[in-house]
Length: 227
Image (spheres, rainbow, N blue to C red):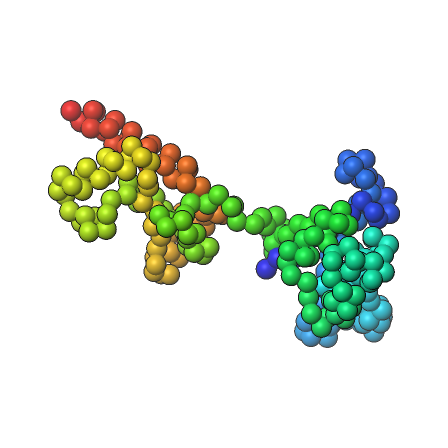
């Protein structure tokens, strides 16, 4: 699970203004306790919690951005090229802006958004855009753990040891065409993650190629030592 932090230089000044390059405010979600936790509260604690504030979620974020920009619903609609009714629906929660529109809103308000894991507090980054792809140019499944399998050869030759298979392998090495795969079995994927850990992201194509070249060099070193 992740939570979000928003930082804006339009807020009241803080102690770290100079380091940040301007005033900063952190807006985080309000903690909503479960019933078991609330049963242990005193009457004073219950009254204090009931005073708020409560998380405004997307409607509240749109209103916050509009307040930072100091514009009306009509003014924000004009900046975005939409109708005032669209902004009104966002602020009442009847609809929500698309992710691309929300990104534009945050950029207009000079607000930076970060994602953090709720348990560890570690930053959560989007997956890299230059991750390795298959030979058709499509991305691999985001949940898959990619593995360099070797230099690419046609499927019908992968279980052969003929000259054609070795010729394709040499050709792919020169062209730096890797073969990339991943575990389809959830069981074996869990086993490998227990042993080796969970990869943070997919490797880039040049990283896969570099690993295969390193394997070839290690193989050649072992052959020379055995000779």
